[in-house]
Structures are given as C-alpha cells and as structure tokens.
Length: 564
Image (cartoon, rainbow, N blue to C red; front, side):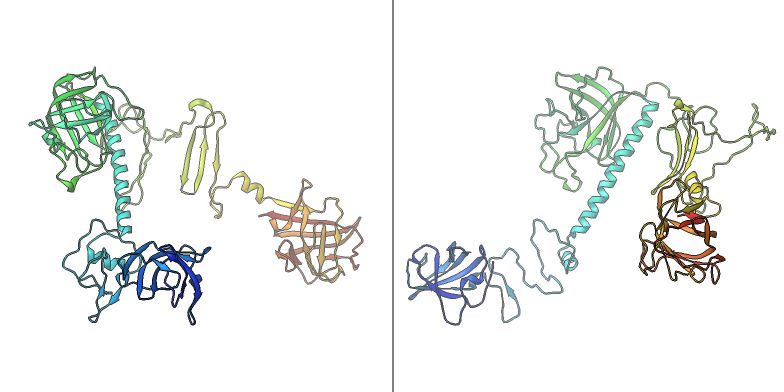
C-alpha cells in the first residue's frame, strides 16, 4: 500500500470501469507519483455522489482500478459520466488513530488489546494459536509479556534436542553391540509405531507395529503392554522381510526408542504367525516411557499431549535368549583386572583425565617372568612395540593429529618411515627433510646469463641490479630482483634471506670488482619485488675503483644465502 500526499485529478471515466485520470487540479500532483502496481486508496466525487475504495495504479494507462468499494453514497460502484474527480485518500475504516485517552484503536484488526504501550503488554488475556517472535528490537519484552519463546530460543532448543537424539541413537547402537557380544540376537529390525490403527486384531501398516494392553486397546505406555503386533516388513532401508523363524516362546524381546531412553524388555509367552504380520504375547520384565505417536492418534492414546513425540521416530527391536549361563571372562572390567590375552578395539578410545590430574598415564614397567615376578631390564630393551607390519603395504600408520591436521605419521609395511608435519620453531622441535633442505646454505649467481647494471633509481628488472653510486669504491647499497640457483633456474631474491656469512662478489670477466660481506637484507625501497642490502663496513672490503657501465655484462655471486 502506497500513500501519497495531495493527489487530485479529473476523472474522465464513463460507467463503472477503472479511474481514467484526466487533468491535474491546481496545487496538486498527478497519480504518476505512484509506482506501477502500487495498491492505493481512492475517493471519487461525481457531483453530489461519492465512492471510497481500494485499487491498483497502472502506470502504462495512467489508471487506477476499482478493486474493492469500502463505502459509497449509493451503496455500490458509482456509474460515472466522465465529469468526475478522483483523489488519493486514507479511508476511515483503514485508519489507525489515537483517541483522546491516548489509546490506539484498530478496527477489524486481528490483534485485540485493552492497552498497548511501549514498555509492556498490559492485558488480562491473550488469545493466540501460535506465536514465534524474532530476536530483534523489543521482541524480548514482547516474548516475556506473551510468555512465549523467541525464535532463537526455539532454534536452540531444537538444536539441543537434535544433538540428544543423535547421541541417544549412537548410545543405543553401542549398547546393542555390547549386548550382541554377550547374548546374540535371533532376529532384529526397526519398525515405526502405528498409533492410528483402528482394527487391533489385524496387520499393522507395512513397516509398522503397535502394542495392546490387557483390555485390547492401544497400550499407552510400555508398562501396559500385553501383546505386540509386527508387520513382517520392517522400516529399514532397504526394507527387510521377517519370518521370525528363529524366535521361540521363552525368548525375550527388547524395543529401544530412537528419540529418547524409552524401552520395553519383555518375555515372549506366546506367538501367532500370519501371512503379513506376527503377534507376540508378552510379559513385561522392565520398561520405561512410551512408544512414539502423533497428535490425533487413534485408540486409547493421543490425549496426553505433554509427552507426544513424532511418528517418524523408529523403534529398534531385538529378539534374544538369556536361557543359558553367560560367561564374562572375555570382557573388559570397568576397573582393575589384568588381561593376559589379545584385546581388539573396534571403536575410538577416549582419553579423558579427571581433575586434578590433567594427564592419563600409560606406564611402562619391567617385563615379568611366567610366575609374575619382576624380570628386570636384563640388559635388553623392553617396553611398548607398535607393530605396523600388517599387510606389508606401507599404508599401515600410527598418526598423531589435531584439528589442524597431521602432526606425525609413522608408516609400517614395506616402506617404513615417519613423516613430521608440525611446526619447526623451537630448538628442540623434530625436523624433517624439507626443513633440512631449506635450511642449507645456497649460492645464488648470474649463472653465465647476461646480467647488467642499471643506473636508474627505480627497482631493477630481471637480470639487472642497481646501486646508489656507480663508483665501486664508494657505493654501499645494492638492489637485486633475481639471480639463479645451483640448477640454473631463475629465483626471486625475496624468497631468500642473508646470513652472517653471506658474501657479494661482482666480476667483469676475470676481474674482481667488488667482494664484501653484506648486512641489512630487506625489501627494496624501490619496489617490493626486489631486495636491497648494504656492505658490512663503511665501504666494500675489496673493490676496484671503477665505474659500473650499463653496457657491460657482469658476473654476480651471492653466497651463504638461506631459503625462506
């Protein structure tokens, strides 16, 4: 909706069609002040008749549609004679006003309030079906007044719940794996709860199950369960078809909810197998919570909305037998004990110190004799051996890493080696081949290339050098962009740094013109692609009192340089 001041024109419309704009009244502006497609409120005056309504401005035709009439002197659209006038208005029914008591009246508004002020919402009752408040402006005050969550609070609650659901699912899977090692399953699968089933004596929906109580209705909680109906096709991806051929009366069934810690553990006392479903008659041994279902579910459930959860949550089901005696000899105790056999780890090992200790110590002791007595060092090495010979492939590794990547990787197999990726900044840090190679001292030189002197004060180009003075006996400052390494490849001088033993030599043919120790190696003041340096003394140590010539070719040596 676009409101503009002082729009007032002739209206040349004949009949009940759109407002066709005529001439602009003196002292007013045209409807062209609006944008094409703007909604607008209008008023038409035709002699003593009038019409107030809502329309849309059409720029190409300079017309205003008469979409909706709010009020008129005739109770309907005026039939115009081409001699009317039209102006932009603000209809009384749409106006927001402040009365003499300072109240804002909102006729026909969705929001209803006795009092609304900037500091609080002061009303005995607020009716709302849903409120979600953004976290900007004064929303925190609104959320407090309405006793609702802000959107960031809802998002955070959802995030926490998602994390808990994910962790619960992982815990359930880990627990099932532990139980599997002790009591193997005769059948297992995942089903979703068919809470809306109305015929509780027939098959649940495909991939679903439901539970019944002693009265034959939906069991509200797992504790009320007397019968469990499973469709023979489960909800796994891809779906699995179950015959339950290995499940027998006397075995146990467990149901784990994926959303939370709800579960059912029951003993099977009877079974009925049908073509598309199987019914289990059970006695509850232990339980917690209820199955997942949605609002409006059928049967005897669906009234306790405080604990309603999503229908999409699945239940993990396992059938097992505890009839025989279970041996725990091969399992690791939580504390104490000694292992004398092989231990296999197929999961992460988490090291978590407990304060005040900030380290978990793996202590290495002397070897022991067969009777457990201390064997002592015995003049030979003892300790922990990481055997990386499996597969003899060279890909077998022990790695030390952090969030930034590898620190140390030790390879076994046919190519045993250790690679260090960490920082090398301390005198006691481990070093690697790359560091050693880069730490070697290098000789940079002109390599027989045409290397010349440039007498300008600009930064040198490739295969040129510049100075402050062209007289070799008095010049103390040199600027170089490139030289060549031992392979003959051109290198940028900025990728190297001088050492305390770096020496500059400049030759003309077989004649030595300059030889001096250098200092103050730094980025050139003539350009950041070049480097500059000074002789170590007040003048070069060896020099010939000659002027450098821009036409001649010079041989350059820069020794004992270190690669950055």
